[in-house]
Image (cartoon, rainbow, N blue to C red; front, top):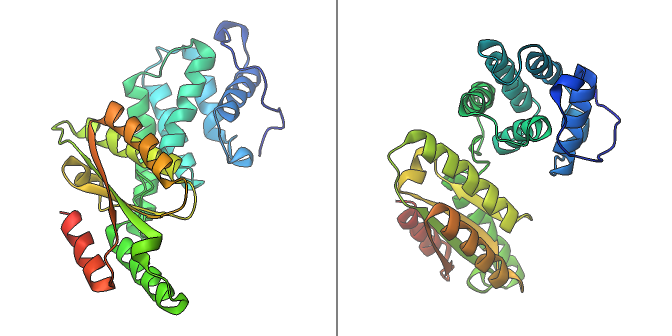
Length: 262
């Protein structure tokens, strides 16, 4: 059941002066102001559990708050909310309470809860990495086949209408860091190309050395979008980016993707 309180003032609030309803209302307003899209799916029983744990035990609460965050993560995954948006929602709660960032143990709990549900759904079938929101490279091959088939019918050339944007992150030994960077990369790609472009990454582990590959239309604002993405990712992720035209024929395009994916 959703709350009807509209987005509004989003400043900090003292938890000592709040009841569960006031806290969840302030939390919801902060999340909506940060760009939450699934408005009707925000309020759940897991939200109430997190709010109650905070008010009863404070931000230093141990197992009870971590367990509530894990339940919230599972609830968000079940509703189809991405992991990045789920973590941003938790950050909104802490912005309301003390203006700080959620501690790593709670981020880990909510991410683990989300992964438990989200990965289970992924293992049942699908073509999208639930952590990054990026499609698989196998799906990219399917999309390339469709693009070249459509071009043949229209008498156009994919070499003129599309480009491949290739992003390769520098290797990192820490697994948690790789997860965080993979999630952030998926977010950055969707921000740069929010339309119908195909955004891919073979798997989570591929981000240690393999690339993300985006099949994008060569429209008028592509250079500006690419430049903005390049600035964002090079500054914050230490990544290498390049943009390549598609070959003239499908077999060469599929071969190119295979080469880029390794």
